[in-house]
Length: 279
Image (cartoon, rainbow, N blue to C red; front, side, top):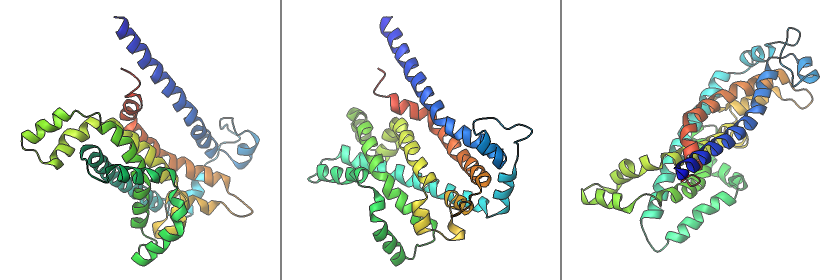
């Protein structure tokens, strides 16, 4: 009885802590959305106040839809983010499974090499990546962004998923082999469903940097047809004058897909974060 109460209290405390951090993280987003419905004077005079009859204005959203093709920008961002997430989760999970399941001579060295990708920022290789994309004819295409973001996300995915896959029972996998299942079926049918919380954790930590990134879209895909929403919002930021109404409106619209994806993965994310904390 005491152990059950202890477990319940730990679970509640972990959820309360996560809830508090979530509210803290959502406050800047709420502030952006609130100010996106204000006039320029309302933004600067009372940034923390709610819009009223004097400060309410939709000029920012009107400007966003009038200038630039933001429907295309959103479509590009969604394609890049979803495709990159799929590749990161698939190839990261397969690499983690291979490193934890099979023993070979370069096993440890390969794991260390992949892990180095977490410590060494991929932006250090921007010039080499740009040259590679030029040689491959992939500049100003979404494919170039998907390839770069996949390479950027795989090290973290392998690092997290390896720890979870080591906890999968060997008896379960061996039973599958005795029943005649191939290694691919063992991976997709037996292992992946058991590490869904870890997959959701990787997805959340991977999708936000991809969606918010400005560097690689600016370097690799600055053309109008391949712009992402973050790069498209820069149109309203000038050297001397910034249209803050339009910037805040564009950012408010950009927040929505990320929140939707977060809500999809949130349940599994909490399980993944608290997997080793609550027994």
